[in-house]
Length: 295
Ligand code: GLU
Ligand code: ZN
Image 1 (cartoon, rainbow, N blue to C red):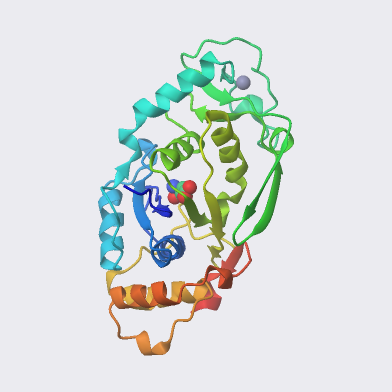
Image 2 (cartoon, helix red, strand yellow):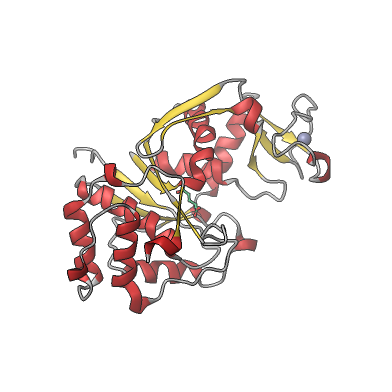
């Protein structure tokens, strides 16, 4: 069988319910995939049971369905992928590319989130320790389809980063890279809050010999008071009876035409319209958008 030339995904974290910002990201990845005749997968990023809100995985899938989204294949749950993550961590440790870190949060205060390398050569055992990946003293850059060129120096701006937490939970950066590759994802379309995670992911892909997807980061939706519409801010969950209205607003946020004549259309009809007119070059070249201006 011919490998599809486009495989996209939406990868929500079940630490809450879908809100308008996640709808914008879901819609962009869905339309970009379908307009290209590609596949679109849903991956539940349930890596962090303590932060998971009970019932939210089911609620997220239910909302996607009510909003007319149809995905390919079974939903992938990261909680079912621990063997793959553990295997890779073992490999990175045995190659000396990763190491155990026993630094406390307190010890890392004052470094502005850039790990100072304290445990690099300490030879700590891995029990009860975090595992960090050594980063090279190199600048990384890539061309985002919307945000343009993005540069980051891994050594100066990030430092050796955690791939398994001290409590044994796997880190997002590792899981996302392994799963994007395992699922054959060709195009990552997501919120611009993850722009600065991308160089870490590019480095991991390079290290593990994985192919690199294209990236498109859509503007983050910001509340008037500057909060990003996200997990930490209590934004309203997407209401089932507002699907058409919110899909039209999300289309507008993405710079696409959302005619008033669709106000009484079904969510599915709005999505079909979106697929027909999708033009990623119209997405605002901006890291964020104010939610109030989209009403
Ligand atoms: N699970 C991440 C989030 O909800 C998104 C990961 C990704 O798209 O790479 O913010
Ligand atoms: Zn340390």
